[in-house]
Image: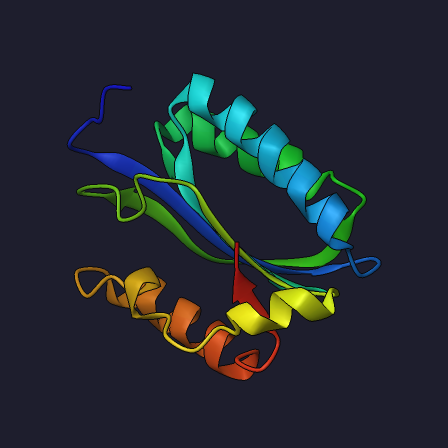
Amino acid sequence: MKLSKFMYRIIYLSSATTKFTNEEINKILEKSKSNNQSKGITGLLLYSDGNILQIIEGKKQEIKDLFHKISLDSRHRNIIKVFEGKVSNRIYPNWRMAFNSYQKEATEIAFKNYDFLINEEDNIASTFIETFLKSNKDKIVIK
């Protein structure tokens, strides 16, 4: 995938209409990876206890089209776009996902250190990610 120097980014928050199971989250992740890779879209998706924070990056029209599709998705509501605009580069060139675990064995991978998700070069994204993670720190695991 060719990475352009100038990218477009949208950051949004939303609430799931129902809490997702690990299986549902994994299905969403796999479908997103497949769809987004072919369109050159990368980013970060965090989920915990019904709360969603997502950052999507790529070509402007691809990102706008994806966000429109996301805004029509009935699995979440109260979508708040907190940032939209041109950026100089991608901060998350690989898709990552964090989510609340419903399985006891997954709590052994308790989410303690999330510094690798924070990008010092992007204060806007880092602020939202850090706030989201701190408010959900006892619930999030990385998969």
